[in-house]
Length: 164
Image 1 (cartoon, rainbow, N blue to C red):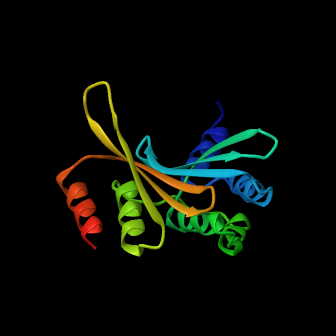
Image 2: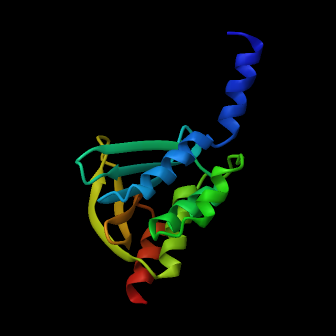
Image 3: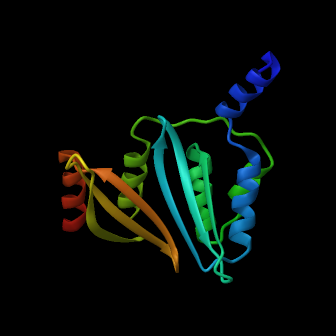
């Protein structure tokens, strides 16, 4: 591998790939039957997974590193507000986020109280660790899913949301 290729690879890892953003825009514009989104850490990098299911039966699965601006733009796109994601499509974005990226987004969804929350059966890892499986319905067949480690903090967030 040449020095130039290594520098290009490092630059790509620090920025969100605009080709993926273009595919996200195209996916939403193709009016899929269903869109499922999951925010999570992949190799300690805030990331987003999108699963589009089209009327033809074809499924498209995209994964990309993300930052707060792209995450919010994707959420807006789920409700057919494409302005923010089109802006991102036209400019490079640096990666960014915290170690608790997924939990922070979950807390944001809980505090906004504008999307229906469904709590599914816990996911249990092979070692017995339990993860909350929560789904927020943003629009018809537009779902954001979270798998979060069951902690005291998470339980207190859920209790407060149920009491409100």
